[in-house]
Amino acid sequence: MPAPADGAAPYRGRFAPSPTGPLHMGSLVTALASWLDARAHGGTWLVRIEDIDYPRCVRDADTGILRTLAALGLHPDEPPLWQSRREHCYASALQRLEAAGQVYPCGCSRKEIADSLVHVRERHQTLAYPGTCRHGLNGKLPRAWRVRVPDGDAATICFDDRWQGRQCQNLATELGDFVLRRADGLWAYQLAVVVDDALQGITHIVRGADLLDSTPRQIHLQRLLGLPEPAYLHVPVVVNAVGEKLSKQSGAQSVDDLAPLEALRAAGAHLGLRHDATDVPDWLARATESWAGLLARLPRPGAA
Ligand code: GLU
Image (cartoon, rainbow, N blue to C red):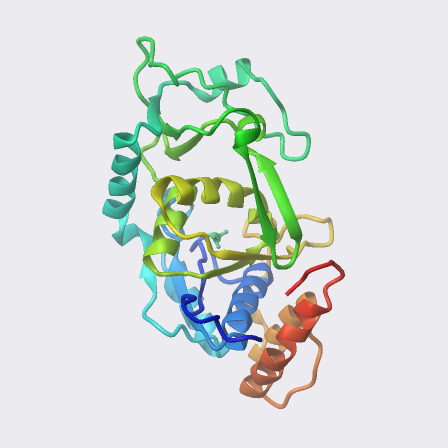
């Protein structure tokens, strides 16, 4: 793979698990793809524990995930970062957006939003927020903080995904002004991920395709906050026998139940990497060699 052009930031990638349970095959596929992409670029690979959705976090799942990664030979190049220790950074980003007039408090309940439904996305059944509180709370108590999205065509955000090809989403018609701080006081993933990717100097994001439709929201925030836009690669999501994304809720098996080499082979096969190896370091070295070729062969024009 080519070295960065003169002046381009050196490659920095990351794996950003939410500690909601042990590492399962779906999250291992993402971890492995991000590790391989970083190694194939001669770059740096980081791990960030996304533990700010407190009700979803499971005690000690973070240390368990880090232990599992280490057993698989996936060692971060710098100490892991915990989002729960960085809430002041999300607060200061929100303040900057407030000073720029880009965010506003919202007093609408979920029910009110559903009642004033303007659009239903067939695939995800997402409601576009109709902007009720854009011009004031009208006596309601503030609950959440929302960021404005532009109107009309200006709300269309496109990016070239290195695996999935060109993606476009109109934030106004598909989502509306979206939440950065939730009614329960918790920071929204969309804000935290953008702030931390910038803080950690992430140049390449490799993650599951279930997050494809979050990316335009993140690009919108990067633009508002004046942050660089990383390159994106979304790998296909691993599904179970009935087509559900693997997760703790869908009963995914822990990767710890498999021998490390067996786990890597299974995750690699999902990505289209199939080769023999004598042990974990040997498997990882061969997979790193194959990675660029695999991306180049994706059935899609312009894959790199
Ligand atoms: N924490 C997110 C998850 O586990 C991933 C975030 C990201 O990679 O941007 O689904």
